[in-house]
Image (cartoon, rainbow, N blue to C red; front, side, top):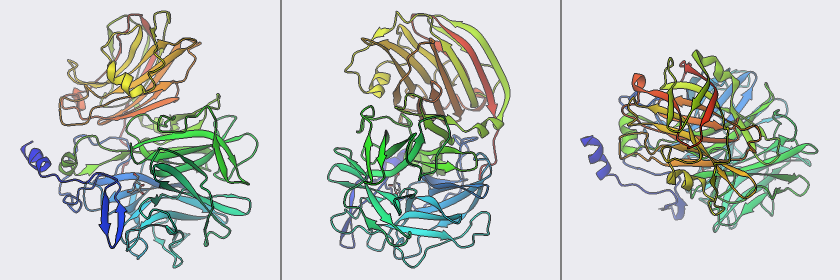
Length: 573
Ligand code: DQQ
């Protein structure tokens, strides 16, 4: 503790977006930069708070998932990694492989700074599988002048099933920040798609406060030309990091290859906002001939827009799994303790459980669900049925390892008449979750789960719903509230929240939570609203962790069924 406070008192950090003068160019740093910690290689990794079944390397800092792909029966995940410390810096593309997206084997980093066009860092990017079954990576390199440029890398040996080594062809960089493009706001190329005789790729950018996705075209994947207009832009959103653009089917859950357009297809554009470190997405229409994307008027095209995840989730990226015909989403979930804690732990950052994603029947939003393969880790299942939860009711889910579990529960709401009135000015769900925690009585709700809870409830992370009555409909709020998650005072403990767009006609609401020591990933209403929390209990650890279902609304709710499992550890790097 003493060491931590000494460390934090000498902590000098630069916040993201800080301008650094370098070789005559102003360069914007990304992530919080702690120069004094960057090269501190780890001598001992603390097991406290390490996850059991989430993706993480054996030590050090990780951030964005990069270039996920399925190639010849193997899943590849690359990710931003500091090989020399537990804070952001010295960034390379680390590389792991899997046959099921759950068990992972580490390989040597695939990309690390070697050339003038990436000597100061190999930042985020994507994979594309070109005709002839040839995978390539597009990534952002930080060049000798600290400019952001887009590069290509190709496997050295296509007959290596793990694609261990990657080379950087001599015609790099492919795209440079020419003209009025800000050299430090030009990054994170998407997976390329094919249409109208061209390959097309997006690169994140901003002009003033207008966030934009620049569009580049190429006939041969070698020479790239910037389109005179971006694919899309939105005022007031700031730098668009890690754009992701992909088609979704209007019918069913099957995923589509990046190049699919036409009847029965909509498109999704997701951007990660550097200024708030939240993401938002829109559902809309893509016009390939004009290379324009127009969001539907049901999707807010600003920082209040729909999110894949309303919690700690950033720099996400999807890929098309051609083996199982599904689209899969990866997202980075950062620590919410301090940088000094991370240095002491020897590690920082995990990836969320891969989620299958598809367009909801309404056509207005995305639905997500943990990939089915995860269920192979379930063991010691317990089952509860028809438990009445009156006001103040609480029931413990016993017989599982509550610190590392998967729980699915369905509640039925007998009486919606008592729902509290909804004020239409409440447009920020996180604010509503902060105002009314799990113990604040409502009419219908709060009801839900207390995860990573200590025996006497000194600590818990509450994931719950609250139902309100608006003029002509019900409004459902879902919260993942960290405020009581730890007795430690120095960690960040927000109450995250999102609205759940359901009509409640069947009077039921479901919740699934993946609980894993220091992370709780929750899926409301079958995956319509998802929230991830990072928490650091000191009592609710290992055998000291408990799981409860509760209701603190004045109206009784019924827990129709609850299934919970302990989760085994897969092979994890
Ligand atoms: N992280 C990468 C950038 C990206 C940012 C650098 C998003 O390429 O814009 O580590 O977290």
